[in-house]
Structure formats: C-alpha cells, structure tokens
Length: 71
Image 1 (cartoon, rainbow, N blue to C red):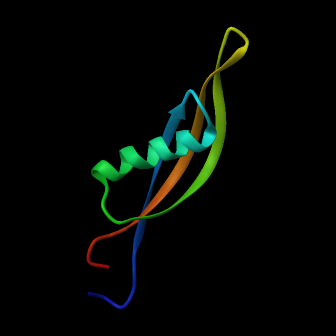
Image 2 (cartoon, rainbow, N blue to C red; image 1 turned 60 degrees about the horizontal axis):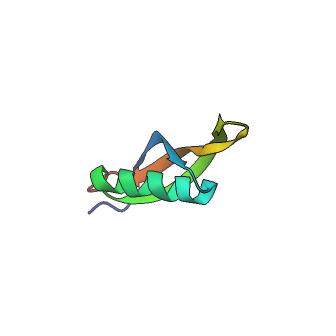
C-alpha cells in the first residue's frame, strides 16, 4: 500500500420522481454497483423534467470521486 491516495472522478446524472435527495441516492446506488472505493460526490447541476406544468422528475448532475485501487 502506498503512503498516498490517488482519485478519479466520473460524471453521472441521477433522477427521481420524488426529490433531489432521492435522485442523488439513486445515482450513488447505481454507481456503487460498478465502481469500487467510492469516496465523495459533488452536485454540479440540478434540473428537472416538467410534465403538465408539474415536476415529472428531478435530475441531479454529480461528480463522483473514487480512490484508485492500490493507492
């Protein structure tokens, strides 16, 4: 094991019909299925889909950081 950590970031978008928080949770849960060593996230954008004048889905852009294995 090295004495430092190196990270990589990926950009993802989560969605939810219920809330911004759930959109974040959904995105992170899906990311966790294929990326190891998730460490942090930052919200980069928030938007939504409108249906009949109401919120259809909340959409949240995220940058997710993960530690490169072995670092």
